[in-house]
Image 1: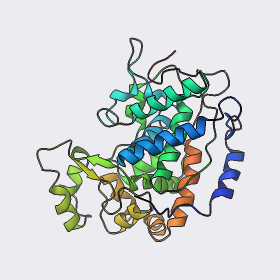
Image 2: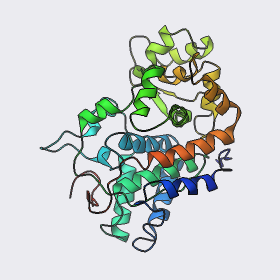
Image 3: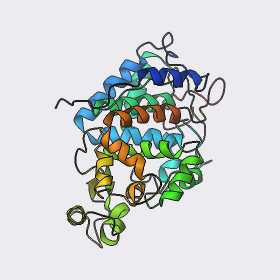
Image 4: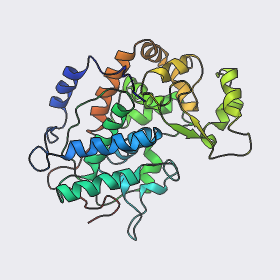
Length: 318
């Protein structure tokens, strides 16, 4: 199915300016000489994976987010447990929830064949997130490259740092502020929920107990999420255009059709209502701001230079 992008205008010049003031150690042409096929290899693999399963686009985007929010964008989220540390995969926000590891493995395998020991897993995550959004009809942005991979991971850090879907607005603002994001950036990054799905266990309380919810929407969601069973049953985060990356998420919030408690908190009589309204009425504004915020997120505490390593297997330290 061909997707018509609503998010592909007005922001490129802004992004180049942002990249210029971002971490000087990251560069969009980092692999131009050492692995010139790196970006095309990632793009092709992501496009193939998303064409097979639209949900994979959301899963790859989420992997990058859950990586960067825990000790920076260092691919720590990809590490399996070892005798010396318990990794992030088993944290409550990730266990039986994060997906796409096999896609990252496939990309890494292809790049190790083409350019051994050159392209980091952290950079693969950053580029795959961007390419996933594009594959779903969303905007593109320029990804700074040159990250290196961590040699450890932390379940505790993942547990503490990744925002819960049960958070109220004030706690969401704090969670993102702790990572250097403004409230406006928190709102726009939440727009990633315009695609993907959530498990019943994470929204049951909202659809059965909350009042700031459209009654027809609640009834529909309840049909796939019983009050006492079906924890793993999935429902789309965006009830209208779940396989497109657009601004429908914000339109849903205005209509009290946010699936997660944390989603609807963005439009519930609080300080972020006006920002949600702005994004619900202007697709281009959302797309521009989202791309800019993703550039900023990709620059969260990257390992560069001689720090970390280039893992040959993204699941384990060399």
